[in-house]
Image (cartoon, rainbow, N blue to C red; front, side, top):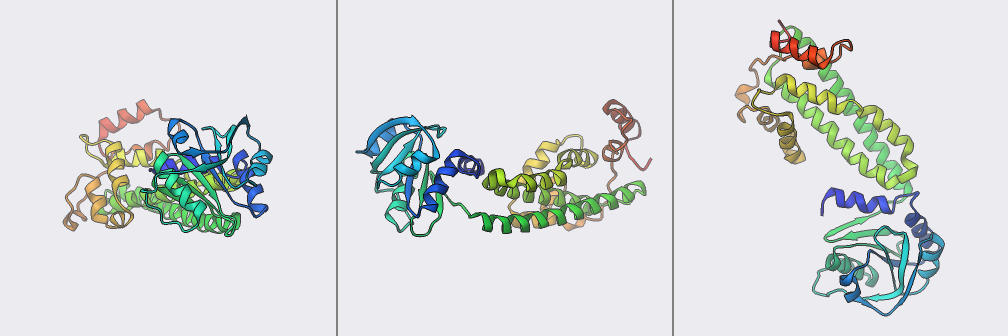
Length: 312
């Protein structure tokens, strides 16, 4: 399962969603539940007993139905309750690391059906999401607030460092003093800011409607990030390279690999060696010229093609 799979599940149970409202009712009442999202022939094979409802979903209805011991089956978009009080019998050959009966069944069902399954713990009062091999425990609002605050501060700090790096780079560009190491350090900071912003996006999904204020703050910090990185890369990569290929390479690096500046140097088309760090490199001028609002893209291309080097 991918990060996108996780985000898709979180959106369905984010605060403000009808399903989350029903889940909160169940949690507040101190009862448990097992909810399977989606129905097809494979689900039918593992379903035993229960009764067919086929009614519109409401938080109140799922709360009342959760008072029975069996699982609840919803349709794919959670707009209808299809079955209630169902006994689910997934293949026991699927390995589970859970201890409670409900959560063991939920994990096996998710692996067997490759579908989203929500398990609500009566004793621990928490919610765990499953899909295939994916497992994720939802954090409560207080936990989320603390973690989001920490990640937001980190994002603000890294964005400040990136901005300062770009300002210094502009001065070096005009004096024709830029080295490969200067460019690699700045590119590394672009990627770090991107990764932190991706991390906070998951928290925002989990916060749902409660995350509007944080979402505004994040948008303010990264609104120009992609455009700024695009013009930065166009300044320094060779004509035979593309900005997308550089980004793909950076995205493929693990966090620890990204911290090794030699790996970032490779992304720019150089050999993985510190011997190239002090090599001079000239900017074409895209980033600086694009800050002049009166210049069109056509004007910028003409200037770059004429002078080749911003220091000229």
